[in-house]
Length: 95
Figure (cartoon, rainbow, N blue to C red):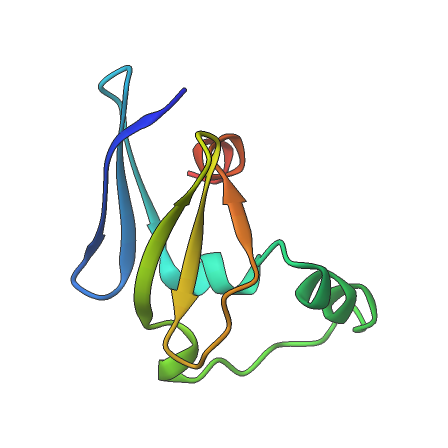
């Protein structure tokens, strides 16, 4: 499944229209909290179950989106974090 359109809505959501005409709307905070990069995965694994991350505005503000091959996007966050590669399958399942 490939996206035909990807955009940021109201600075709060990633909106995707898929090739099958379905649509997904995912909160940017949720995307940042579930960042799939190795650093973020490690940080989540090392926290206790009761850990609640404090997210700042610049951590959930998108500075840019880039396609990665034909299988994913990379989100460039305003705080400079940009190593997470969000596969389309992951995004479709997350929505």
